[in-house]
Length: 68
Image (cartoon, rainbow, N blue to C red; front, side):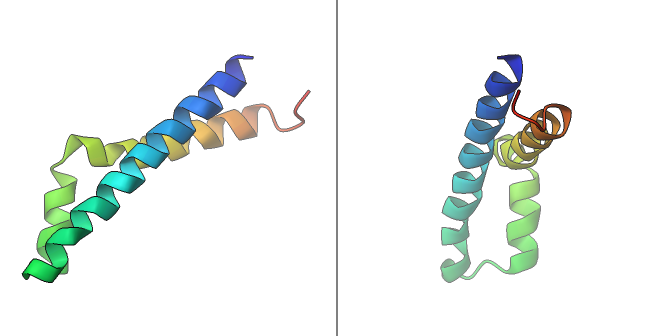
């Protein structure tokens, strides 16, 4: 049951971080370069939810692969 919670928590964080990163892509048509975009999202703490969530998903899958 703990691995399921870990998986769902990771999934939620990954979705939150991914949506935030995609939402910040709206700065690109305004004239922000890709380098400035990556520097900007590197400074935003909510963008770190994507890699943290993916890490939690990987841990829950690799530690509990059989589903039993």
